[in-house]
Image (spheres, rainbow, N blue to C red):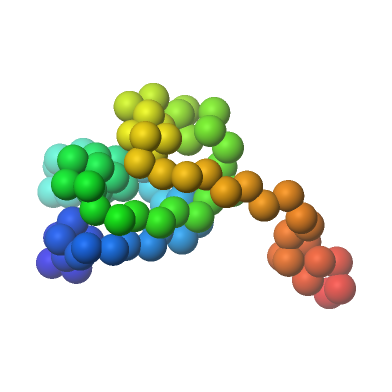
Length: 93
């Protein structure tokens, strides 16, 4: 029920794309939740903001060229080049 709501909401933020399983077993059926969600939101032109540590090659390998192409068409890529906060925090511990 919560998953279905993600298809309907007008704006969605997906944080840290690539940390989830690409496919899940749903009562014997293999599902690809993120791929299905991104494809649907693309078709309906719904706002989707994504953060990820994956580069474009990794996105294509994980989700396929089709999803990468749709992401490129409907989004503006912003690349942060500064040091990671997590790296700084881990060094302090």
